[in-house]
Length: 514
RNA sequence: GCGGGUGUAGCUUAGUGGUAAAGCUCCAGCCUUCCAAGCUGGCUAUGAGGGUUCGAUUCCCUUCACCCGCUCCA
Image: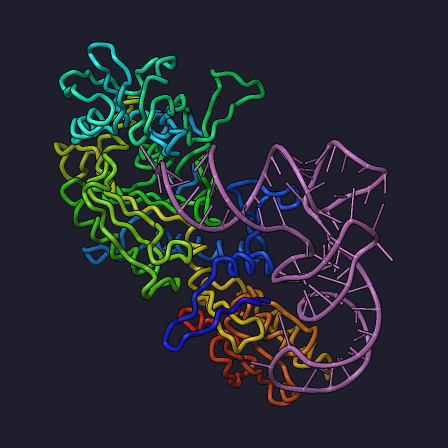
């Protein structure tokens, strides 16, 4: 029970507190700290009964919108997307080709004095030509000579920029590091030896560990798609443009897991790679941007707390020509936003890399014109499933001081873990038997719960707390009129429905927001 | 990885160098009631490890987890 419902100021929505959301997740079985009874493990989370339902619902809605029932393309026909479930461990060359082994393993150096951390390859060390100390480190960039000039003023009056030679920090011998003054430090010898930050999890295939059988847990599901591109082209009668979709776990050794399940070391992704002709890439980029907006709205993540934002040129990673973020205002990012999905125009970078490293041709031959050959370009809508779960949880959490728990979960019915509860008003007069019969029928089609214990108010309250949109209550009149009462979660309003219509009623109300 | 904070039952809190307290939840029973009603009974806790001590939940050390800030974030 929440004891900390904040005082409400008129016309100001009450502030959702992450602590309350995390507490609810544990209390009601959405999400637990992984290895809880052993004191937990940093960066990992377990999904309980309701969290699993919620996550599966979001996952299935994505799969449905992508693979089973993909959107109508610009030509009026549905686009073609096929599914894939690739291995978590692949040949380690995959991750060399993708850039993760190099890019995810940047050596970092810490400044003991200022507590700043720098990428070793982003620091330039200037060494005086006359051999005098100290050496001056600055952050690499267009302005590095200006930065150097400022440091010279402070540490080597009378010298000029031209009296120094530049050396990348990562080329400096370990023994010479104490000669260096860090970029914002006041004296030398504050930089630590560079430490490798390898964000890919390493493992070994086979029972004996050696460098020869080192392998990586995948850092993203996307590479599994790229390395199967050719298999799918050759086996599935797909033609460009088409997509390959995959949902699954990915692993990153995050430096600092934070914010509940937002940044964890094991997480789940929903990624689709859309292969198209380079001339059409911009059109498809806009197409998927719109489709992805619609999808997030369809699972109840909407309103002022979601934004769709194009990256500025200086934010783009080097292989991407355009990136578009779907971001949610989480309680811990507010008033800022945190990323839910990135839609990236990745050019033909990934297929090109795998062509180069595997020596397998990735060229596509236009079936209508054999003279047209090209490596397809890729638009990638890559969403975080577990981040989606968190956004849905935060969005649904609704403070309501009039309810026993002080809140309820306003899930869109299509993501709600339990769609309906069947409740006999009392435990006598044959009501449990009627309820049981209705439950046995409904459970064929819906995740429903039968609850006969305790008074009806407690049972409604419990269902509100886990976000069950509908309760069907069997009462004394049910035996004679064959109707039950539908009680709505958000409004607490009730209406009478014939037992024979309950299934239809549920189906019709599942698609719309309560 | 750095700095700061926090760890007592499922939740919210109390307390003490000497038998760890309560409310709510939960479970069982009574009651049979449309919004956590009432009555009875019950389960469950000092994050982990070490040290000091006759005795540690309390003091000390280490460690783990979580929160905030920094850093990082293909």
